[in-house]
View 1 (cartoon, rainbow, N blue to C red):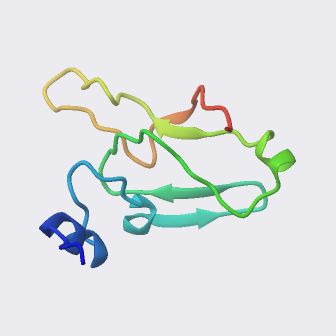
View 2: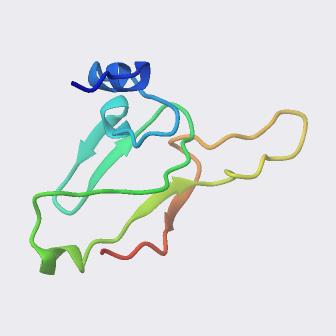
Length: 99
């Protein structure tokens, strides 16, 4: 019998563990419409990988991955630091391609 370390036990109860892949979608607000699905978080996130399951391979070829932004990852200038928000910005396409 193999003993489980603290990281394995924590991963089993759904708490994020440093260095492990985490499904952060569950921490965001899900949105969707006729031709989009989205997830919004209250704070900026660095996303390194997106996994989508349950779709046809041909449909995957037509998916576009975008993020909403205006000043991130750079800070704004002036007296107050400008931050991205839901009202100021634009959809920024990524270079992501399906595998």
